[in-house]
Image (tube, rainbow, N blue to C red; front, side, top):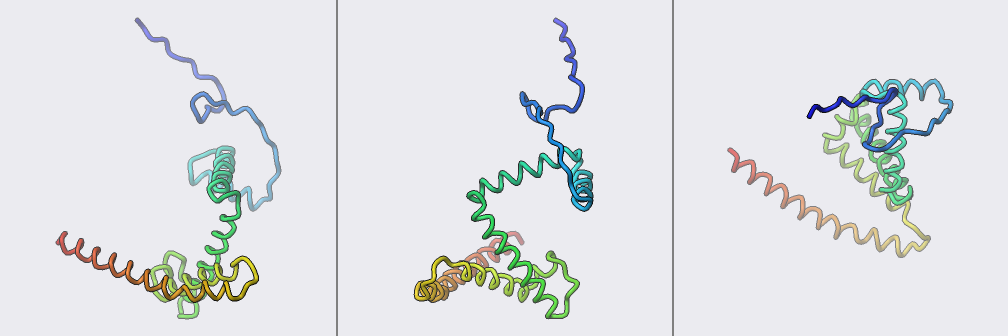
Length: 166
């Protein structure tokens, strides 16, 4: 039996088996955003339309993963605090040109960034009860002690693993 070659429909191929792209949306964008979309599409190998769809799907997925945006907002605050403090520490120590990929490897910059995240979380603590906030702050040394133990354990195990490989 000879198989017949399937004729592909014209136009843009569907991206998912059995799903048709049937909605057209027309909207305007500012020049800067258009430039970013064109560049991102070029970098990813997608068309501008596919890039827009990809980014929208990713945005809705992130909203769902971050509980409708509340957690996403806090995660963004923490990320901004981390970035801002790390970059500021690099500049204060004579390295204003360092990128995030560079300052994140510096222990002083990383420490400043981590403390900024903790500060952000404490400043966003719900409620106005000072005693409750102070209880959280008082619990930090216990948390730090636990973290120290965990880090020491991981360090020793990593060193053993490295020695076993050599």
